[in-house]
Length: 303
Image (cartoon, rainbow, N blue to C red; front, side):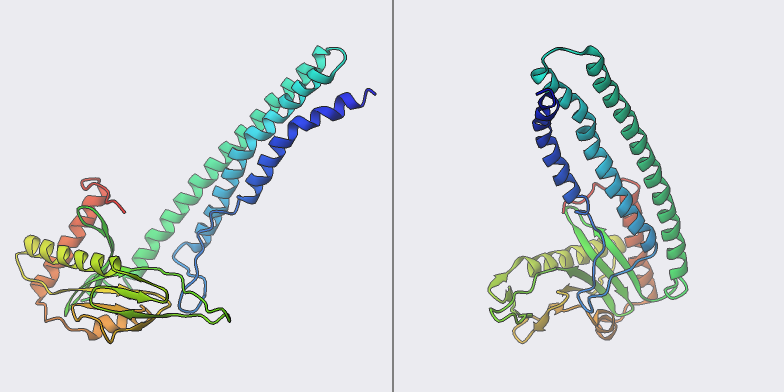
């Protein structure tokens, strides 16, 4: 039966089809949208709409880059199957398979070029929105304000999540995310007990979060004293969003909180008065270090 010569080569396309199904299933693997652990609402930043469009553009780039080789190989694989099962060789037919693959290569090349151009435009738009957003933030957080927050402050070998400079001290803020377990009846357990050297979660305990926060606090205190020539009061803060914190056995050198009332806690905590000269020197030193990292003068910290 002549029709079998065209049907049997389809067997060779099954592996390509399976790979294509996997690619389609993974197309939404990268989703940068996150929800607040406090109220489960989607967290939005300046340029969030462009961030979402950029995520979709990267998903399109992933599809075109992954499906392109699969689709362009399909005519050639089918043609090789036809050569095995055909009773006679038809070189015009083989040329058509090759021409179809060539056309598909050109189509996917154009699609990839389109994706790259779209991503470049979206990145430029996002950069502009972020720049304007930072300028607008000075309305509520002017540079002369006594409170100043730095994000991703690099040390010599790691990164401090946040550093908050207040008129009453400097705070190293580290954040750790941990999944809350459930009881067999579906009730969530979200209580963590803080001891001097460890955190006791339901079912396990950890020492590293407290150790790393103390390490970052000591580094920043020593670095600020070296850079400013002044003794600066520095305190570490470890935040565990979404957890109820039991601090009855905690040490007094660290603050461990859920993070929901972080700003109010930092405002109420007085480590000692900082004069204007020291306050300005601390901010200038941290700004200079951030600028050095942006300019590539500092090696990127290991995470």
